[in-house]
Structures are given as structure tokens and as C-alpha cells.
Length: 153
Image (cartoon, rainbow, N blue to C red):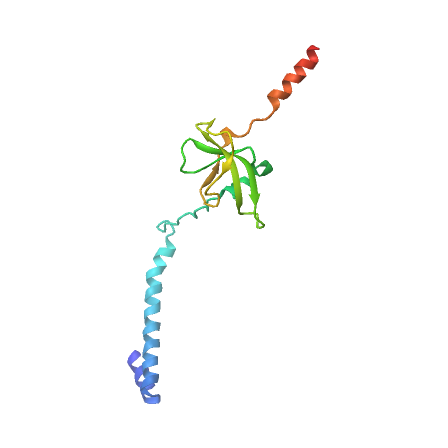
């Protein structure tokens, strides 16, 4: 069949047309073979290993934006740090709201390692996490003491 089509093409057109037709024939004959090879894998979805989509890690500003007051007073650390965190004291945002500068107090093993806040380096790197067990303390304990004094007086 291919030979008859080729003979007809050569007799009608020039050699360039025959070359183009031969390439088209090769392309047509090879396409169903490739589809036949690919079809068994589509019939059996259990053999396909579908990789889950990786979540994009967040920078410090993206983590802080979901916390109350932009994370001021909360503890954050880089994912690879062990026992070291920053208590955020100040954040300056750029206009886009996803970048900026941050300052904080260093904490090691839950205890303050410095008294003065310092500028946090690596704020834009995508490796930050919120540390919930070291979050800021609520003034509920100080609020209950004056109430007890009022009742006693």
C-alpha cells in the first residue's frame, strides 16, 4: 500500500514532493504504534506513579500575615534551626505586602538570648515556620490579680 502511494506521488510531483510525502507516511505509520504502546498505561492507572504537588514554603512575611497583628510578639524560626527562634518585635512591609524587613529578639531553647531586638537576616528565604508553643503570653494572669485585690478590699 505504501509503495503504490509512493509511486503515484513520484509520478505526479517532483522529488521534493516525494520526499515530503515519504516523511508524512513515516509520521503516519509511526504515530499509531506510539499510541498503542501508550494506551496500556492509560488503562491501568494503578501503575502510574502520580507525585503529589510540593507545597511552596513561605518566607517570614507570608507566615506572619496570617497571625494577629502581623505576628508581632509571636515566635518564628527557620525550618532547619534547632532550639533557636525570634520573637518578632517590628515588621516593615514593602508596598506589595509580601516582602519587607523584620526585627526580633533571639530566643535559645525558649529563653531570651539577647535583650535588644536585632534585624532578622534571611527574611525573604522560603524556610520560615511559626512556633506555636512559644507564642506570646496573654495578660490574663496579670488581669486576674487586680480583680482579686478589688474583691478583698
